[in-house]
Length: 269
Image 1 (tube, one colour):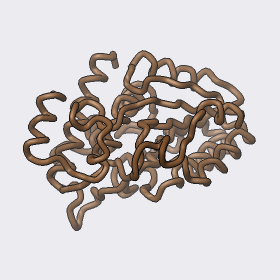
Image 2: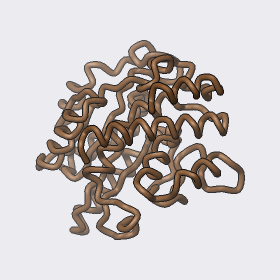
Image 3: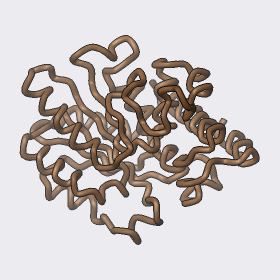
Image 4: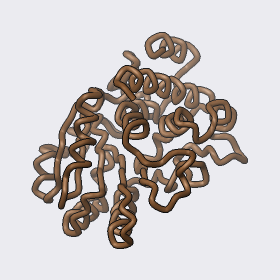
């Protein structure tokens, strides 16, 4: 899929994610929107996991570790045909359905129920190791938030992946520079993040997470790297795409109002 098509699908997914948050009065829209460009590129151009192949044993695996941002993930899955947009709109965060407000493995296309931070990468390491030892040869992709990198379990998994040379593992850090209590640099500074990850013997690619040429180049780099796991440090903007939401901590917690949703639609679509 070409860059302009990827952009249009990402914008559509952003608006659908905002509709879901608005209708259900749910939170985490800002952190959902920051990962849209990376995630649509992965699903449209790289991931061997479609509605037709989702049950095949050698399918690629994707784990959304920042499972509280599942509204955008669900929107991407709907864009790719795992379920319909109307089904998603009708059921998101409603009692008696499987469209929970944190990622649920009971839905088509979702490998792991997530939301308790620091779990996705360790599971991804196990999947990648299993792929190698079984000879199945599938790749594993995992998105974590930069605030989530405060979790010690991630750093244990980072050591384990490098030790086992898991070159079929691609970690994507959605570095939108904010977490629940403020800017990451003020809560618990991660920088210099790329240098830290290099010292842990990973192949490190740092990009603008909203630039499609850079995103595509980073995934190509992963595909061509041998002997090391790859981490893509995607520098992003929380609330990307809607001017009044960008780098606004309010939208970690608040759903858009009727007026805000209308304004967002004007900017996104």
